[in-house]
Image (cartoon, rainbow, N blue to C red):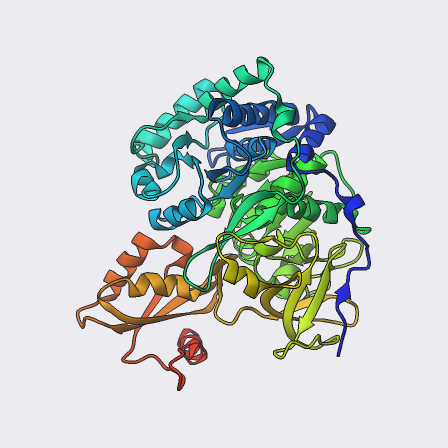
Length: 567
């Protein structure tokens, strides 16, 4: 029997870089001042930049508005549903400074999915991107949302430029619908009113007084095997701790004053939030936010306008870029740090990328319940392909057998993790918390092993989970939607490999109504599921394969789907 593997680098309370996230934001603003913090760049090449001083003042305004104007108090929840735009970091950091809790909502969600998260989180205030404006009523029905504020990717752009670009988006491209109902305000009105409170002497320090590392900072929602997404309760200890762990590493890469990260991974996803926005905020790295990364030709002006040196991505992004003619003909010259997470990095992808750009890709492993980073590749040696690095400082990893025994090196079992980054639990779901956290150990549901050099590798994932472009899709989530369609009798969902998205969703359906067509199924899914969760292939069968106790035998379906895909 083996023993838990502990990171070689110790970590304790004294290594925490701040007392809470508001403290960390204030430190970064004071440290980096006039340096550029975040830019937002559009496919047209138009962009706007905020420096750290501006980021600090505007986030102060948000904090004062939420506490003074709206009267929110400790424990209240603010929902942010936005793509990568300047409004996001200003809002998020303002919520932290106000001593409140954030919940990040995917802007691609359907009203059903948004409604569930708003209800479950208990959000009182909802900042929502204007392109979602025609789905407000359905999304808020039965929720605790008291006020809704309209956001735009053009927030903080100069007035004339904002007016011209906004006209084109609304009336020429027609991508911004009329806003359903009356918004309580906009980002501009919040900043204007909030600054009045700040300049009048609002006690910003009071909002964070007595805030502790054990208070909840973020309700980060993740897929659930019950068909309903669950809110991981990430405390200030988790978030500050995970940032602090990355800075404690003895192999951490050197900082460069001229570094600029391109962030096209969405900020509502924990990978982009932790590795991108929060780590870069603390270190003073300039981040170029990309609100519209598709098609990938939208990224061309980002490389033209900014000296991109850091790029977090996933396997499919790197493959996609290498297939773009504009990228192949003129690959970036100054990339020095590329990261991969959220989905396995194929060695062939890493090798081709390094050959084309000269930059190695450093793979890591993490999950929402672990505030993102559990292990990552050392930066002082070439990446060890086929693995996802070593545990970050202060992290323990156990490899556990089916009967609960801790296994030794090179033995595959379920990955259990313990460390300061492990979530408090699942919001409003005691049973799921009990099932997932055992004596402080997070049961990841992923199967892996640790080799003789201490590197962690992922052998398999949760059996039923499908990863589409880095996003987790749980079959029960999709099956719940399918079986709510009255023409569907039974349904089961599996994943198959896909060259573009890593995996795609395949649905096996037993008809409840003989007239049911593939087109009807696709239309139903489009109404109730965000794009990456929707089945791309529909297979009608007479009967689902089941075990003697009635459990659907997904492995048989998976084998069938993969066989058909290979034909």
